Length: 294
Image (cartoon, rainbow, N blue to C red; front, top):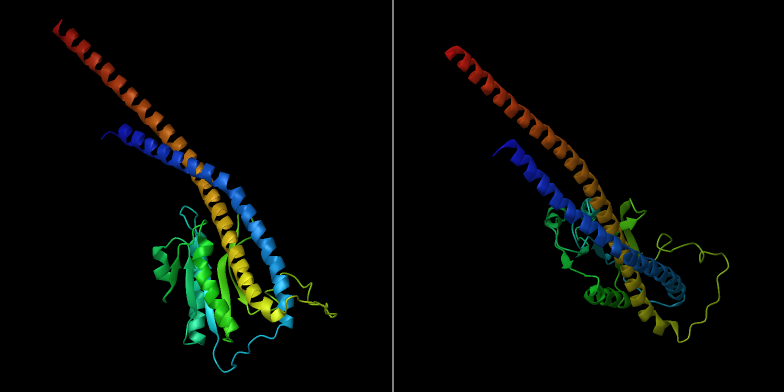
């Protein structure tokens, strides 16, 4: 196969890949606004529900857990549902592995681990313990996670010591997503959205119906709201990471095509020059032979 043919095949391949990445970039741009709106709605809802849950939990007498028993920990990690998003999963997996290894060193019993997203071969490499996979697509993720929320809420209401953590990529900006692991239960100062309710003068709150009746429903709603917020924040970060990856891929494809086109033109010109030189040389030889015969 000639060098020109090889270069033409490479140009054709890069062009086809560029068309795919351009199409994926367009699709990502059309969906990203909706995903970002869902994240903003989930964030605002979770913020206000956390405030309400904080007020009610202070007044309601909850079942006391046995102080001697160790805490049972739940960890929900949110990963990408599609590919082509760079190191979106790798950064979170690396941080999750460090936390899980430290947990095993401190306690013989590890946390119950749930991984939400498309299954990846790297999960087994980084996570050296048993875990449960939830596909958790956008249309039915609440139905898939509802049994888990009900299980955690049931154990809390039964008086067991439960700690709940969410691991996901926090959306800092369009270009930056940072992996974080946040505790959403039990509540502490870092869990609260702001310090509005850490005031020296407590507010008088009247609950109707009684707080003991409201608390179980508010607890389930609070856990679901925290999960929703983390889910949509992770989804928004995934789409932004994919958008940046596709833009970078398109830019690299253009640069490669420019270099290949230049290389193809130079090679073609060299081939033409070589063929012309061979033709001229042949004519010189024929002319020399004719002169010799004459």
